[in-house]
Length: 273
Image (cartoon, rainbow, N blue to C red; front, side, top):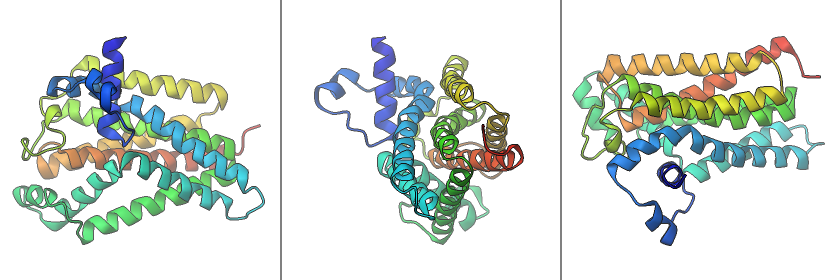
């Protein structure tokens, strides 16, 4: 149990701005091998992020029931809450990848551009589009069934954080390993770690489906899976492997397509009883 908690807290420290400091940080410790092992808990971090953003989403929907724009306000508030908790970790990866792939067709040059911390035009456009689509899709889901939309927001955080694990497991790390945020993951992911990560996702999915039965959830998971496969293909075709930025972008794409899959399915299913 001690080892489990240390690896989980290390993943939490890596992916969010939740403070793990002082004696707790000393107890958790750090090593590249530990961070590699903590990859199994990336979707587990999604549980905590998901509970936080879902709570904000639900609170705003509850506080503004008479406001016609309540779903939009709640969706925007939840999105901001998520960005604040994670420090825009994944969004930053999306922007950097868009700058790199949009800025040059040459693999080496694209990797060089991605190391530049400044955001370019392609990155800015990708960021604005991703955040806008996220708010719009969440608002759309909330207009149909607010309670189910809150559950969807929670589940999306878990499912989308399982997506990068599939990329790490199937592709090599490329680029400047020494200066990469994902350096400890350059050695890949074990099958046991992948299955542990997927178990976090499976548990979240089972709990949500038990409370809100319906086939729409599987459409969301399918959307996330297709987004992951598309990103994996893009990274392989353009870079011949993954970077930390590519993993962040994969999470963002998987999350968006999860919402899109749900929106399409729920428009057919209709509201729950």
